[in-house]
Image (cartoon, rainbow, N blue to C red; front, side, top):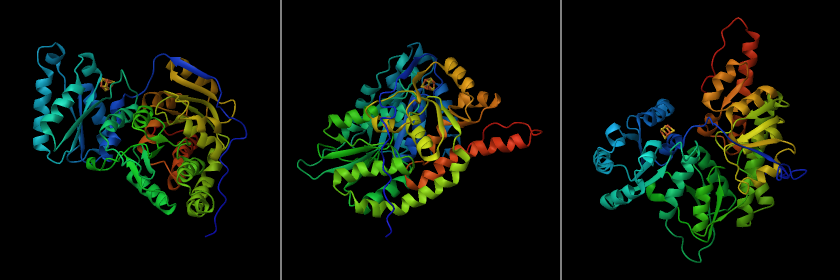
Length: 442
Ligand code: SF4
């Protein structure tokens, strides 16, 4: 095999490692953590997510998942109504009744999550006690766990973090003294997971476990011989819970683009002692394909400016990819939370002088965005349409979470997600007599 040289993954300087960060704690425009159910229910195929919330929560889930509902969806909302809010009914009795009816009707459910919301928090419904009580009742057929997806406590992708962190205490223990094992942490599309599994196998890295697994009864073991790679940058609580079980995190950038994917795989290869020529030879074909796919989008994206509003916590790895592999200029990179140690390798690769912000004061940030007039704005749904109305080109941040974007084979698709709105805007500009259209779902 004709191996391509491995890209030297290092910055010319320390990048943004020590860069100042603008911290804002004003009004924010971000989805709550319930949104994570949309991708998690598809990942763990025998799990069910029961939101204990209001009609608003039910509407959010149904409209966000509307296009993906199957004949038998694996999520639902137990509505807390006025009687419950006024303390006129015993919510626990009602919850027990709802769960019993659900499990009787859906015997395939092996793992049930009670997902807390703003209303359940406001009335201080203790879902952790409810989960223990229901687990004892339905054991061993069904495990019942709880986590919070409330907008008071979580943003958007933090729902996945809370869900996975809730699973960690129940993971089986690894055998004492066993050789090291790799755990890839964070929900990935099945197709991406299969590609990574194949690469790890070819690199001689194993055993490899993916967390969350596709089936509730295939939870990965964890212990002092576990080395884990985060596949997503928003899993701070999960990482902490795994470390409390003795696992060790492999520091790496995230697997976005050729460079990020290579560095991410290299971190695992170094831990398992399979660096050097084998690594080059195994990854060369995929690297070459991905590099060629990116080249097609460079002309479109090179030297274009991008502004990130805080949304998914993917912003910093995405900014690194857009700037280093596609030549885009970063005007501001906003993120809901900046986890310095999990993002250390990413920050070092960002161009020096990039404006970083954490949290949000939406009006002030909108003013900065208008002043910068970037070529493309990455933001949530609530901001995208008004900004499009002001003549800016936007990309919905939520698409970047729903779409498979990790790994070599998806690098071109990831670049295309940014190129497509610019192409559409250019076409609209050439046809001024046509009415402007809102951003299409891609
Ligand atoms: S959890 Fe809170 S923020 Fe989320 S949909 Fe329900 S009420 Fe709204």
